[in-house]
Length: 141
Image (cartoon, rainbow, N blue to C red; front, side):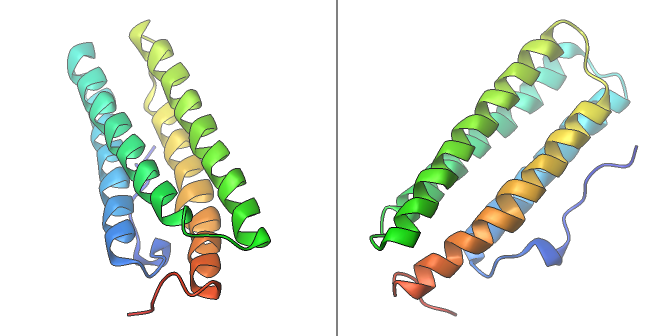
């Protein structure tokens, strides 16, 4: 299957976060490519670990931004969004464990990428930006 590719339609309007999102997608493509060309398991896991570290750092940045949210809708969003970051990382770690056994078709990575885009890049992050703007915690531009 072709890899999940970055498109500007995923941009949320926050330069730094959009840059991180692009890098996260590109890192998953690198993992998927390594699987497709039957690279060594060490290389595949190394690329996946790099992506995991990048996602964890990215989640921390978003969570620091969301710490600014104080109104009830923003606070509720923060709780849900942070919990979903944790759930997503847990899912990714379980996938890494599966990969170590040698079971790592590239479709697994594609599904992870689609989940990342569907959850983190599009839905929750657009909502996060909306809450930050609503509370005056983020300026446009």
